[in-house]
Image (cartoon, helix red, strand yellow):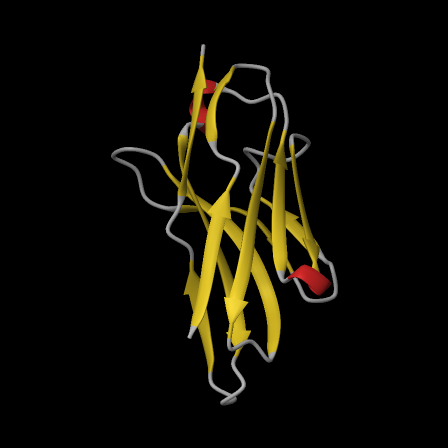
Length: 120
C-alpha cells in the first residue's frame, strides 16, 4: 500500500504565505510525476502545479509567480510554497503522485487534502 499525507494548511491573511508538504510512504519503488491540485467549494478540482521526476515544473496561470513546487526525492516528499496569497486561493489542496510499487504496479495516488483558507 501507498499513502500520501499532506500537511501545512491553515488560516492565513491575504498577502501571507504557506508551505504545503506531502509525504509518500509505503511500498514505493519509484515516484514519477507529483502534483498539487485544489478544489474550492462549488468548483471543479484544478491543477495548481506539477513536477516531473527530473524536476521540470509547470504551473496554473493563477499561481504563476506566486507558487513554487519542489520535491525531495530522498524523503519522497513534494512541497508547494505559496506566497502573496489571495482569498481566491481558499480551497482544499490535494497532492497526487504517480508511483510504481515494489510489485511493479503503477497508479496515481492521492492524499486526503489539506484546507487552506485565506482571509481578506
